[in-house]
Length: 120
Image 1 (spheres, rainbow, N blue to C red):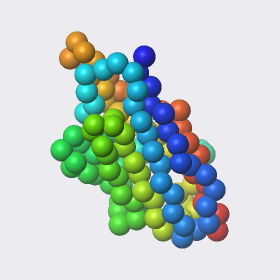
Image 2 (image 1 turned 120 degrees about the vertical axis):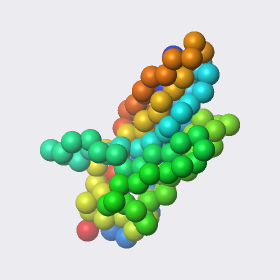
Image 3 (image 1 turned 180 degrees about the vertical axis):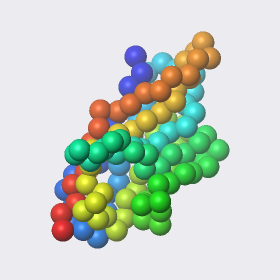
């Protein structure tokens, strides 16, 4: 069974930093795009950043210059380094990955979510 396990959330003051980690486990052929989404109370889930297998990255305008996404394909792991955090970054952060099974079919998987709270 394929799983995405996240870690690294928590409470931090404005201006601080956090690093989120997401590791994929289970039996599969490979992983395509990996990314991070977030959902604040009363708001829709939104893309924060994603990264392809070739390390092409894409960021939401609100986090450009403050957040950095990276991955290690050998470890099936993606990270989100979050710097200069703002109260507006407070949300549950979800890892997302398109995982290809051994039959060649891709499917989208989600992590369980990790809370990030930024105090002013």
